Image (cartoon, rainbow, N blue to C red; front, side):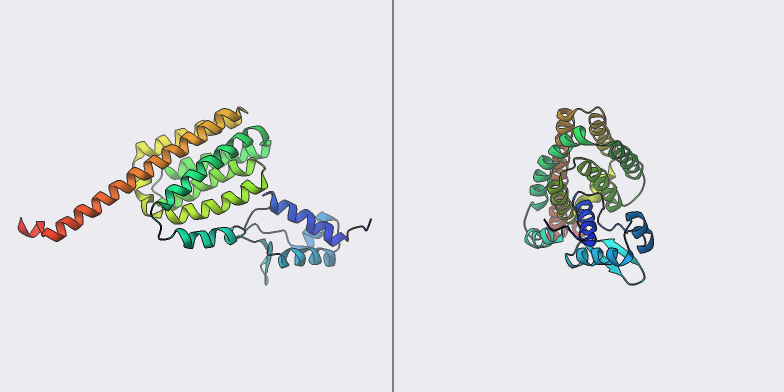
Length: 254
């Protein structure tokens, strides 16, 4: 059996780390000299490995700026789907339905498989999210920290297919719910409910209770689904009332 070249072995190891989410989209690799020393290989072998992964679109090298894991690994799925859903009614609700089921699986697996590092990361992102969502940050910033928290749970499920599929689903969701973000996060009581639901999810994962983690995750996303539906209805009624006033020139008649 032919032995793999050292550069091929390193490329295979780095590719595995990208696939399972250990190396994350957008993450910068250490400088070439440092990385070659840490991996115990020559710099030419390391360069060859990086070139192999760059040719696959997994790494990108910036002149004078280092080597990065490609940020758009899910774009081959999400870009055409975004174009398809752009003008489709209720696209965000279809996305939320899919997300609810997949994140239930992720929470179930995370409760069983999360390492100590994973558990620490989940708590850290929960605390970050709770702080930002209670602040005066923009709706988009609040969505971002919410997505980071959920992604920490998904990463802790240690399922490669689920991880990359959920990156794509998150891209689609961020591009379909933007109209409702300010309404979604404007009510302090509502935000408090979200934080409590998130905390319940974390508690179940920390307790290593997969059934509770799955059920609490699905309950939370069902709540989000119904809330978005209500916000959409409110927005539609407000638009219609404004249009009605314009048609009949109500202010001028008064």
